[in-house]
Image (cartoon, rainbow, N blue to C red; front, side, top):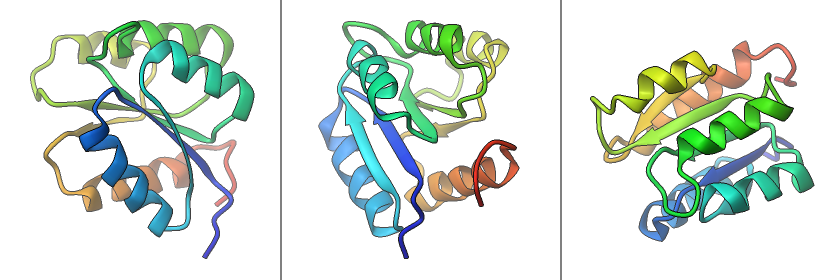
Length: 128
């Protein structure tokens, strides 16, 4: 069942990260986590994940600043934004920086999994 795909979840809320990480691991993904954008950038450089789940609202370095920095060194890394707010105005700006989708907190993890698998299938640089 091992997919050999590394997923990083960058979010400051352990109440979200822990079940999300558990869910992804149960589906066969290797899961990395980071509690803020600065830590997430470090993990991305060190571990080279295949895809990123990135919360937009975090302390230290928010998701928008993190996405900007990721795009400076990796324009092709798929990033799925995590947001609690459907009408977050930062999502428009994030779209301009090239995100692969949005996963809303409170949605069923099955929706996140479907989005993840769709992004992995359509992203040219990733193995299926």
